Length: 171
Image 1 (cartoon, rainbow, N blue to C red):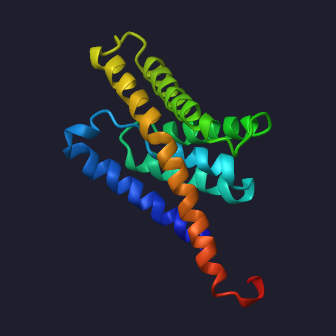
Image 2 (cartoon, rainbow, N blue to C red):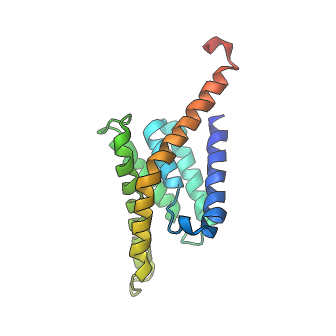
Image 3 (cartoon, rainbow, N blue to C red):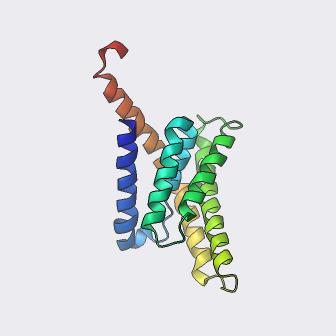
């Protein structure tokens, strides 16, 4: 059932990012919401549970995007590895670090995207809207990042609690 929940979350995020966020000005410059799901998987789930979905959803996002293949897979994979490393040094239960982690993950993905852009077109200049877009993404991530991470966690805990009602030996 956990895999079904992850698949539903992924489909909802993809539908939101590809349809709804493009048509509302308030969502202009919105960041990749799946990054927060990668943070959630790294913080609160085991490697056996999170790693296959990071790879699978990275490949799916690469197939759906128009960018170079492997761009999302690379950013999701390395972000997941970094988050796993951070869990050794940070207390995961502290919700005060979630805005910092959200901002860091958005910066990390933008650095990877910028590096890929300069790798494929070194003579290209940085567009004027790039800095404004990154700043908007960072502001959105400070405000909404912790909310989404905790929402993913609550959805998973609610599903586990609901499933225990069907298993009498675990009551």
